[in-house]
Image (cartoon, rainbow, N blue to C red; front, side, top):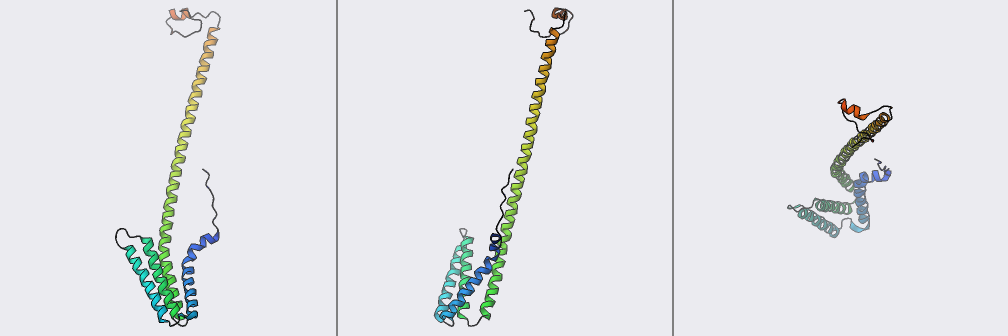
Length: 200
């Protein structure tokens, strides 16, 4: 079987690993830009971000409740809630120490959550590759057995054809012998051999 060889670009390999750091860094940069444009010590902006963060957390809680709960929607809502809370604090605070501390905690938490999904994804991929490999080996085995069976049938047919050809040649050679009399064979008690000139 011919397998398609796919060479992934190094950016495609590195992008999923860098996504959590890029996300938290983007939130930090946007929050500091917001801070420089008037969000520092602004009670109204802090109340707005708190309300948005609590709303996203409530949406995540509602999405995760019950049997019909969707873990993807709940995870997205909780991530949005955390990002909004982080952006609100980073935008409200003066100076960089607290925003950088929150950025490092958020980045570590994002990598902790992502590592769990990466392990699950790797486990699923390995399981799938094993399943495909087992199926491929099983099919190769079946193909080998069928090839051996077909080759055996062809060889048996060739052997039978060669035997029939040799028998026909022997009968023709026997009939051409001088003084050959099939009646003498019958009276001697030998088994009757088929001939083309036998009398009915």
